[in-house]
Figure 1 (cartoon, rainbow, N blue to C red):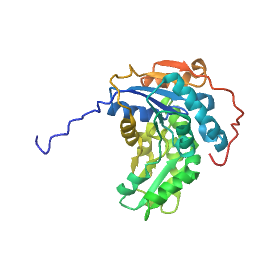
Figure 2: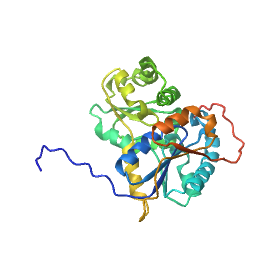
Figure 3: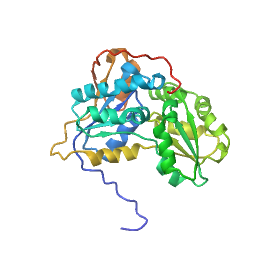
Length: 290
């Protein structure tokens, strides 16, 4: 082969059944990465629409809910691997979900380690939800993998809402994306940022809009491809494909979720099933930690 010839794409031969989970549609970016890497996998999707958005829920409520939701969804979908395609849920309750299930659980964490390798200026931006920004888990990643680097953080629920609106096909003006990310660059040394970590799975849905409206050229990276690779690594050995993918599971009745139903069908999840979650005493009051 000529050294200038393009490398052939060799998809993974892995087979099995995977359930990708998020509070809304953000995890679709991770599902797409898994499908691209392993087209023989049966990939299904679950959204906790009954408790969306996670960004305005107290930590205690999420810690109580997430293991229960995971158990109910796994009982319905019967996957080989459960993928938490949500930084908020993973940085808060990954251990609790793993303890509640008897199958491998893959979490999502901010791509700080690759960002630290990529940056040339030594200044990294981190776009996430306010909850992920405030978590000790995130601070630990920065301390472990970005030593000697400057990491500037910005938590935005507005950007989550914009990504959801974009996914639904709504016309979102470019100015809205510019305003949502502007506080990151407005910080001291923000003009030195050359690499931005998209630490919410919703954000890659609007990567193009973020690139177009950033105040100066930057590289945006996320952990979707790494999650896909880890999903393949933890799959148990199987002789069958696990059937066809494309089932969607919601924790509220699909007929009450017209917007997300439309998005899921557009992204290749046409069949939908309602999974009821036992009522729990929870509040949706905004929390400063989220």
